[in-house]
Image (cartoon, rainbow, N blue to C red; front, side, top):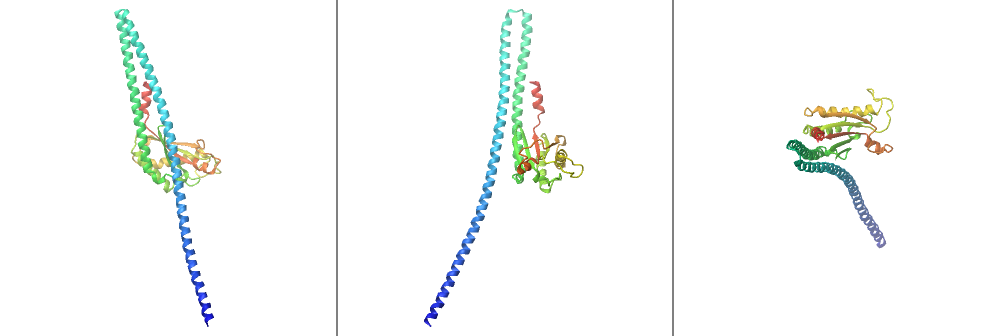
Length: 301
């Protein structure tokens, strides 16, 4: 009888040990799953941060290049002013030498020098005005880029990028945001992005807008309907689809809108790579400030 009780006790002890081990295993397994989920989340956040850092570095590089160009242009204008000032000094020296000439000749030369001095002063003023207009345009494009970034924030990182370079703002949208493969009909997600873009453009009626359609270098096989036979046709139709949505906003100045087909001939990535082809299939909206005043002033300098 005593042996029987002992056996029963050992069996119970084994069962209790098994329960404790299974519970511990379950808890540890749950903790492992949670740790794996947390690790995936951290990996995703790291990828987003790396992408943002790359975009910022690119923007910084473009801004530095633009600053260099503006500094070079300012240097050129400064050189012109210096040359004009030297000319004025020469004229003033000539004026002083005129004292030995007759009163009539002196009067004529004085008039000529006065006219030259007046023209030089006018030219210097136009240069200053030109620098002011360029600074105003630069500030305008900076504010435009910021407004676009705010309006299109939900679409950035999903095939949409915004850059400011060479005095312009570039909004680039990959086809995955706008079109199905082989189609030029804008999907609902792309329509929302274009509508938000048009709202910002409506607030800037003096901005000129060029909408460019781009493709990869894959040839069109057969037809896609409505006579599309090559990448020129496809890029043109996609650009016009964007124009149609933008100009449906009644506040848009339609005279400022231009559609352009670039086909496969302005790639931004390597067409031999799948990801490169995806980047090349895009719509680019190029925004330029009104340059009429600048061109007029350059012609008069």
